[in-house]
Amino acid sequence: MKILVCISNVPDTTTRIKLSGDQNAIDLSSVQWIINPWDELALTRALELKEASGGSISSVSIIHVGNAGSDATLRKALAIGADDAIRVDAAPTDAYAVAHEIAEAIKDKNYDMILCGIESSDYNGSAMGGMLAEFLNMESVSSVSKLEIEGDELKLNREIAGGFEVVSATAPVVVIVQKGIALEPRIPSMRGIMMARKKPLEVVAATGAEALTEFVHYTPPQPKAACKMIDADNPAELVNLLHNEAKII
Amino acid sequence: MNNVLIYTENFDGKFKKSIYEIASYGSEIARQLGGEPIAISLGEVAEEELKSLGNYGISKVLTAAGETFKTLQNRAYTAAIAQAAQQENAGVIIFSASNTAKAIAPRVSVKLKAGMVFAATGLPSNLNPFTVPKKVFHGKAFADVVVNSERKIISLSQNSFGVKEHPAEVTIEALQVEAAAPANTRVTDTQKASGKMLLNDAEIIVSGGRGMKSADNWQPIEELAAILGAATACSRPVSDEGWRPHAEHVGQTGKIVAPNLYFALGISGAIQHLAGVSSSKVIVAINTDKDAPIFQAADYGIVGDVQKVLPQLNEAFRKFKAEN
Image 1: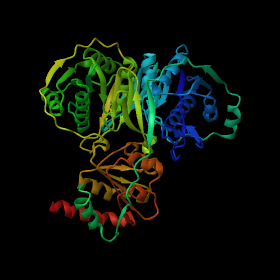
Image 2: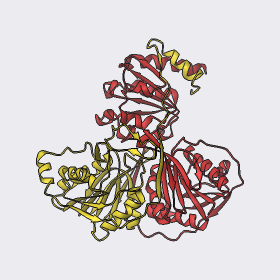
Image 3: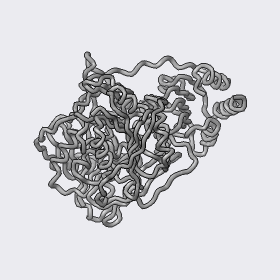
Image 4: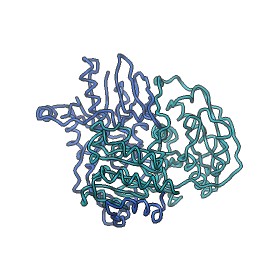
């Protein structure tokens, strides 16, 4: 079995977002870049499965659409344990274009399972994995919080309102994962970092897939009014304010 | 292409508030475009329930049921919704922001080459170019997104438009769908907690953090939730410690929620947590540290030990509920 994990390169989640002077762009000049947290969990789970597979999972590859600035993030994913990386050489414009580029780059590679994170922490689109599955005409299972392999069968928990469905799937399939899929992302070891330098990172030319959407303007959130403090000995006052002032209860 | 198609997901045969909200939202966009708001319902839903969509402006409901739509099969659902959009000349397709919407809206986007805005926060600010507002970086900024394709897909973030009554005469039509190709995924079991208020449906959420100290101290949180008819939630360290299930984690990598009232109890308010709760209408925080960042985001705050304050607060709420 061959696994592919799609990786997005995003600003560190603690980044304070600064806008450009005309507010038509986000100022990314001093941003620390990381593997999108959900993609990192997907990669972690893929590596756990490979290690436990006794050789039946032959490889965990990663793919990314971005320019050379993303290579440090891809090397980190290789240091965590991915076997090889593909970077489609194009600026990622929107999820539709990214999914289209990935589909074109891998259509002849016969991956059995493709893992994607449920969303990216930058544009919060929740779109790429499902779009990729549709471009590839593969079945997909989304909101997956548990993934096990039993022989040729994948056993997945898909979160639904109030619980989960257990889904049985066979390859090929796109699995879109969320919180719970792996406990903690892995931290690269020194040995992993050394080995990552020698692992293949193939750069392929983009096909020029078109985007359908465009972010044109940004505004910062409205600043919040100061918090009204209530004395710890008088919680009834909080009840009173929620009822009479906020009119929320 | 002035018509608007709204995918009205059902939950065990019933529509939830979030579905009446997107029906209201889709009807308003149809009015702006001079078209008709048409719903599509997949799976077994009683006629009376389908007709309830008419209260929110829907004039036609397309419906398909049967074996194919008993459980979510992404390709079959995608094909049915895409077919309905084409047949009804719908230029705009509306989804909620549920897990089902996450599973199928992106696929419909590719099938129809329709640009998608996921978790929009309001009506289009402009119809030409078609411009939709949404949050990015989990609320650290708002963005205007222009959709350049002929067809458009909008998924609406919950509680960002509201349920608006607009009674319309509604007709129900069967959608004739082609038989779906056999899927290589199938649902083998479904597990649901019954009778529990769900996070994404809750108007009030009571959430505990590390300040609760241990899984054994959750009883007063459950109690407050019971008094107010609220759902319970927690911060990331709490679910990482296994004090509460992952499904209760709200925050950037957990659930994004937008209730009317959010209680942050013993939660310091890390930026990742605030990203998941900042759309709440009113936030109440109780924390021992007066400089905790949660007080920057909160509307009402109490500096104090949550374990001491909460029982008294519960008492005060109980008294209020008895009197009101």
